[in-house]
Length: 113
Length: 116
Image (cartoon, rainbow over all chains, first blue to last red; front, side, top):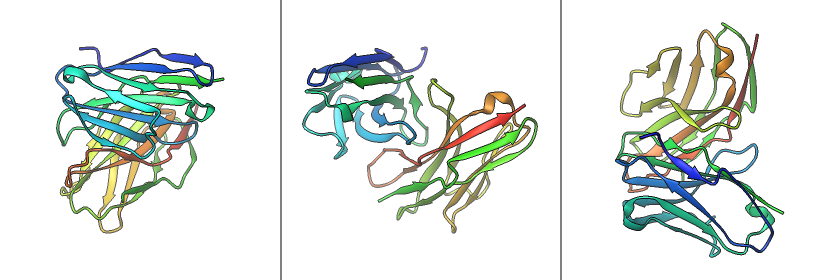
């Protein structure tokens, strides 16, 4: 296993378009997390899966955001009708049950123009 | 609610010297974990060190050690013999171990510069 993989690495989109990001976690990790990081800030929690179940969603995750993790493997994060304020780095992480920390992917940098 | 505060937006250190990054946190949980993560420029975030709140002994990982003061809710990171490769953003993070939520709460980070 080579770690957490995120695709694409960079995405530039026009305002109003839909975008989808993919995250492939470490295979034996049943926890998967999405975070958003804006410039100069720490990552902010978006949502969390345990296997295929989405157990927690942040209030940051508006109706335009949806995440899935079919069959408890990879996950997708979709943003509909993108806005300039959605421009950020979207980080995916996976983990084993506590007390282990997360393993992060390299992130997808979204730029909305 | 859990909060993490890193009061030093930027720090600098001379190569081979020691530097300490500060972190304070607030939580009503009695059991939790604390982490320091390193994020080099344009690279992924990696775990530096982890501390379980129920352990009194401070965690150590090679040149990295923490000073965990539970009563003061303080969790500082000491980097000894600083190397150029230590230059990065450092994030302190809190993870409650009870209550069902497994989300990490991060501070805003400290940018560490290592001068040759």
